[in-house]
Length: 103
Image (cartoon, rainbow, N blue to C red; front, top):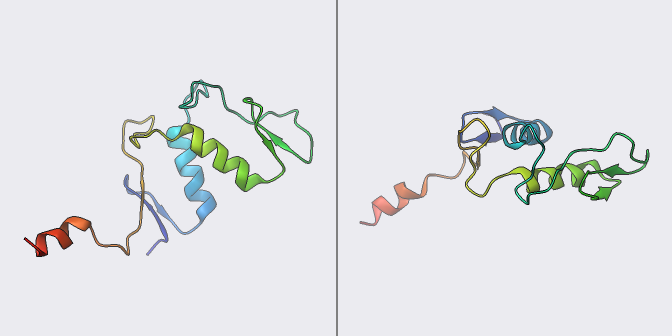
């Protein structure tokens, strides 16, 4: 069983690849983030620093990837494909099953 699951059915063991999936389904063609600003990696940034078009900069790739996910993921979890994309933990039972047992 894969370690990372998305509500759309995508599953994989690698955290980076799961992050790539989330980035792909939420990034709009115009690179507009949920904050109304343009976000994309600048190619001419310093070799020791990653820079975003919004002026965010960091030497850490994980932090940079997190920045992009934060600005692109919509509050309702609906990607550019119209499907819901939310991380799922398959080891946790659906809460409605537990609630049903107590009715």
